[in-house]
Amino acid sequence: MFGIDSGIIILIQSILLIISALLIIIASVGVLRIDGNLDNVVYARIHILGIVDVAGIIAFLALGQPLFALIYLFLAPLLAHALANAYFHGEDTHNNPVLNPNIEETILEDALDEDEAFELISEEVPIGDEADSQEDLDSSEDSSIDESLEESGDDGND
Amino acid sequence: MDILLFGEYFLIIALIVFSFATLRIITYKSTSMGLIGTSSFTLALTLLLLTVGTIHNIGFFKDIALALLLLGIVGTIAYAAVMRRAK
Image 1 (cartoon, chains in turn orange, purple):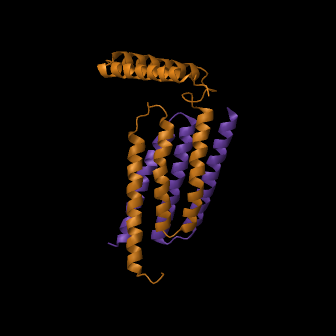
Image 2: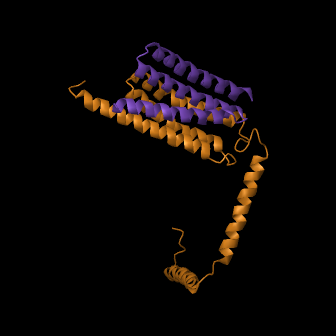
Image 3: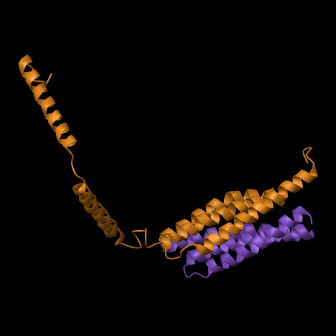
C-alpha cells in the first residue's frame, strides 16, 4: 500500500490496536474508581468515556474500517453533548435552577461566606509603615498640586 | 505468534473489561447513567464484532457492527432529546 512494506503496516496496525486497548483499560479503571458521591460525577464520567471514543476511532482505523471511524468521529461529540444536555435539563438538581429553585439562594450564601472570609483575611493582614508613608506621599502630592494651581490663578477646569 | 493477532486479542480482552465497566454504569439508578452506559456498551460491542470478524474472516459481522453503531448512537441521541424535553 502506497509503496510501503506490508510488514510495516502490520506493525503500525498492531501498535495502534495495543494503544487503543491500553486506553480502553485505563478509562475502564477510571470509570469504576471515580467516587460516585462527588458533585457533577455524571459529567466526569462522560469526560472519561471520551477517551474510549478516541480509542475506538483509533481501533476502527487500525482494523481497516475508515467508514466506521468517520461515522463515529462525527457522532461521538453529538452523543456526549446530547447526554450531558439531557442530564442537565432532566436530572441535574445541583446546577440547574429550574429543577432546584433553592440553588440561587445557595449560591448567594456561598458568595456572602466568601465576602466574610475575605474581610476576615484583610483584617488579619497587618498594615505596615510603608503603606502609611505612601498615603502621606499621596496627600503631599495633592496639596502641592493645589498650591501650584492657586499660584497660577487657574482653577484647573480648562 | 503474529503481532497483529496479539494486538487483536489484547483489544478483545480490553473490550471485555470495558463491557463489564459499562454494565456497572448501567446499573446506577438514574436514567442518564443508563444512557451513558448503554451507548458505551454499544461501542464496545461494535468493536468486538469487528475484531472477531477480522480474526475469523466473517463478513457479515461488519454489517451487523455498522447497523449497531449507527442505530445505537442515533437512538441514544433521540432518547436524550426526548428526555430533555420531557421534564
